[in-house]
Image 1: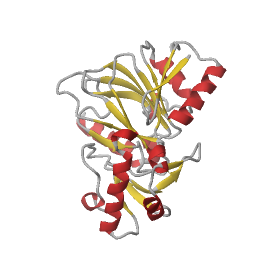
Image 2 (image 1 turned 135 degrees about the horizontal axis):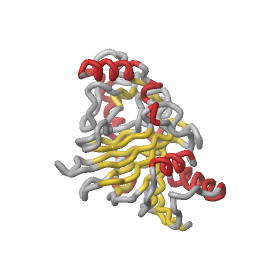
Image 3 (image 1 turned 60 degrees about the vertical axis):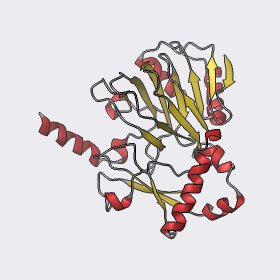
Length: 285
């Protein structure tokens, strides 16, 4: 196994492994150590099954099974595909819940040119905060929210437009500087898509702080852009990193297999969403 850094900000490329075969305990241990330090692993040129992908995911933690909708597809051509179209602003999956998803893996099955994924390192950003900004947010918390019915990724969700919390508009307050649940490292836990505001601050003061934080988080020096090729597998720490996507090329087929490394699906965290989907699908029949 060989390891090379992908950028100065985050990630390593791992070569010399065939992920269609089980990994030895020693290799699994090394991959977990790499994840803890680099937060993202890239494996190129792989040819794997769904079962192989799930087995890889289990190297890093529990994987949701298909009944919990954790194994699925990011696709604009496959029925039921997640986020089929459009831009996705930087975000961390399920930041609007009590237990954000610990990890995610994508396997590229059909990918057009010109539709990368970009990651930002929220651990590195926390370490880069200037003293005055660190002091200003040391004890602060931020409100994160989402609309499960009117999902979109190209605009920031705001409480003013969503209104009071409802069963399908979940929200949660997390510390602006969050202790990573596995490593204890400081994580700058605000994001471009789901963070409405810093709570208990004057709105203008809080927004000015958020914009300074975003400037550090999303500076080009703190990101890694990945241009997908068929056979690529990426596994990343969804708490340490945020991810985004520019608008995909129109009409170009795009399908990636997705594995969620988590004990809880969105249906566990927001039970009303399963009821909503059942009622919607029943009405459509």
